[in-house]
Length: 410
Image (cartoon, rainbow, N blue to C red; front, side, top):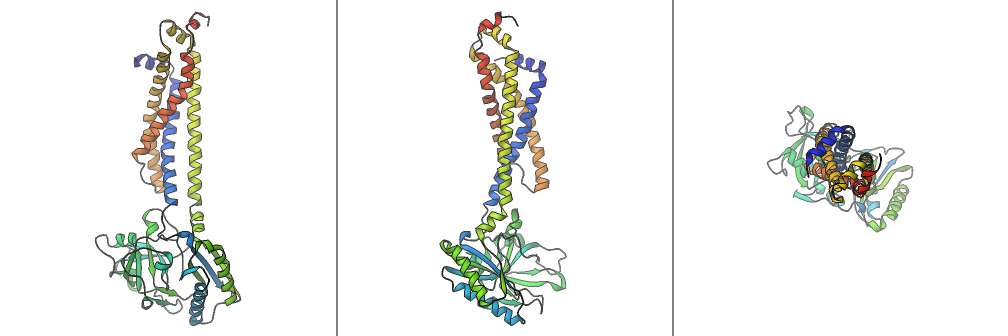
């Protein structure tokens, strides 16, 4: 088919063609980036935390209305509560800690490799655990060993600021601090300067997300200290039989309150509930973008259908004359589809540039990665197909116009 007559016709009626091309360009820019953000949000929400079987992990926090008078009494209360929880049927492991993954609340500290540094080498989420968090969380140890009772350090903020001596870190943190070698046996420091505290790395776990589950590398930078923090506020992580989870939570609350009247359970929750709460906004954004994408494609298709229908009605006499001169129905159908593909191609070229520009803005503002070229290719193909399908109906009706239309008065 000759492209020149189609191009000449479009140039004589360029307003409608430019509107459709602009709509396609805008649709491609939005759809390609929206699909990428949808995939990114869903992948973020499905990230592994490092915890084995999150449905089997519970957390329960409790605080007395009046603090025990001595540090010894506080430690004794922590140990007694842990034993009470271990005695509940269905409880497999218990660990006192100061924070849990995905809970969105916890400690964050700076680490350095040399106390003389002025800036930190990395930040890290700081988990305390006199009991084995590796066991309770089901973490995968890839280097070194777990803590033993001899590693436990009792840290009383009323006495000194020392937080511990031995540490287990995540693989992500180990790679950031020592990219060219093993981490076990090496020393890092909490803070810097005269108050820097040395920590010996005795083990590395594959993964343990931070309480805030930050995006990217920051969500994997975690440290576990074999530290018993002297605090009357207690947070326990429990690994349980998932089938008995609800009953265990009730029994745990009852046992803790009975053991020491005059205190309150602050919070109790399963880890999968923490995951739902943490990623609720990400899932909402993903579904919102799905809705916007579908509506935008429907609007674009409607625009193409409407414009094609208008062009058909305006050129009914011309189509009839061509039919009378021997043009087949296939020729008329091919004409309108080719015309639409030319408009779509122009819009897609502009849309590709617009999509890349929009992605650059999202990268700088939302910390997204650059848009993969595959999304541009898929978006372009979708809009090409959408254009063909949208114009097919009006083009088919145009192709069925009888040659007799050419003899009628306009």
